[in-house]
Each structure stands twice: as C-alpha cells, then as structure tokens.
Image (cartoon, rainbow, N blue to C red):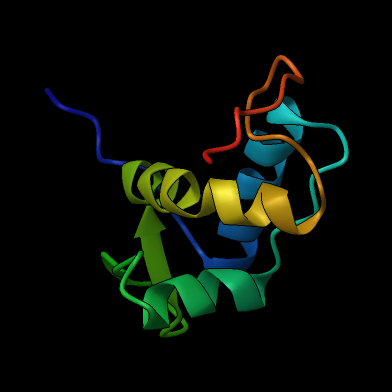
Length: 93
C-alpha cells in the first residue's frame, strides 16, 4: 500500500524550505509564506489540494523542485556562493 504524499500548508512549506536552504548555507535567508505564495503565482509551485480551512496544500516533491529552481537567485541576493562547499563559480568573460 502506497503512503499518501506529504502535503504542507503555506506556513509549513516555508518552514521546511527554510530548513533546506539553511542546510546548504547557515546564512541563507528564511523562506516566508509570502515567498511560497509568490512561487505559486510565478508558476514554480502548484497546490495539490486544499486543507479543511480552504488553504492551499503543496506536495513535498513540488516544494523541492521550486526551491531548487529559485535557489541560485536567493543565495545570490544574500551574497552566498551557490556551491555548498563555499567555492565561487568562475566568471565568464
């Protein structure tokens, strides 16, 4: 029997993605519920249903994809190299 996929409210999704980002870099900015809503409005994330209060629910795998798709820009905004080992990427001439 397959287990139901994990689904998160906007607030829970923001907390989860913040944890992922901080595993990559302790200085990474928190992901807020507003960020999750922005990802949805920009097409990076699609709700998989609604909770009992009518709030959107997001699948674990979809959150991972959206985080990955937006990671480079998010880290760049806080001046953190994308390479988790702390290296810098070579500049193109």
